Image 1 (tube, rainbow over the protein chains, first blue to last red):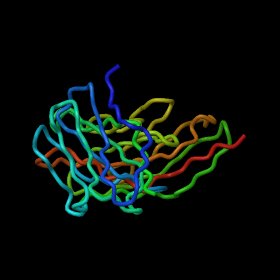
Image 2: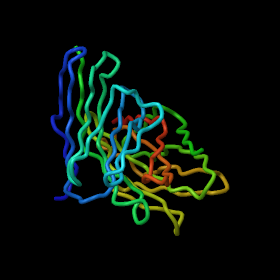
Image 3: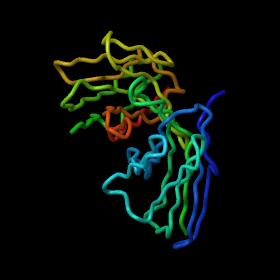
Image 4: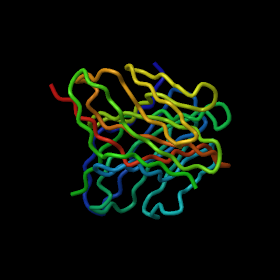
Amino acid sequence: DAMVIQNPRYQVTQFGKPVTLSCSQTLNHNVMYWYQQKSSQAPKLLFHYYDKDFNNEADTPDNFQSRRPNTSFCFLDIRSPGLGDAAMYLCATSRDPISSYEQYFGPGTRLTVT
Amino acid sequence: AQSVTQLGSHVSVSEGALVLLRCNYSSSVPPYLFWYVQYPNQGLQLLLKYTTGATLVKGINGFEAEFKKSETSFHLTKPSAHMSDAAEYFCAVSILTGGGNKLTFGTGTQLKVEL
C-alpha cells in the first residue's frame, strides 16, 4: 500500500543534543510537510517542500531545519532541542496544489527531551 | 486570512446516539474543508472533504458533513455512535499558496463514547 512512513515512532534525546527525524513516502507526491503537535493542541505547520522549493513558516524557530534529498524522503533536524520541543512531529504529503488539496499523514514521531 | 473554530473541545455521547461536531470557518475565498480523525499516538486520517459540488459530503466510517455557505459551517455528523469512534477530530480549511496548499486546523474536539 502507498503510504507515509515515519521513523522512529518514538525518539528520546537529551537537552541540546541534535536529533533527526525521518519521513518517507511511496505516494510520489510533490509536496511534503512537517508539523509539530503538542499535547492537546492542533498540528502547527513548521515548513514544507514543493518539489525542491523550501517554504518556511514565519514563526518556525531557527532551531528547526529540514532537508529533502529526493522526492521520497524528507528529514527534520532539530539542532539543539529544548524541553519545549517535546511534541509529536507529523509528516504529511499532498500530490500537488492544483489537482488535490488533501494531505496524507504519517503516524508521527513522538519526541521526548530529557 | 482563513481560520477554523471548533465549538466544544470535548463532546460526550452514548453509544448509538447521534454524533454532532461543530465547525465554523472564515475564508476570503471559496474554502476547501476537511475533517480529520486522530487516534491516540497516531497520525491524522482523512474522514471527508469538501472542495466543490454537492454540499453534503459522505466520508468513511459512516460520517458525513454538510457545507453551508450561509452559515459558514461544516459540521460533522454520524447517526449512531460506536465505541470505536472515540478519538480527536480536527476540522481544517485549505488555502492555496505559491508553494503548495496549506491546512489551517481548528483546535480539535475530543469525542468520548459511553456505554
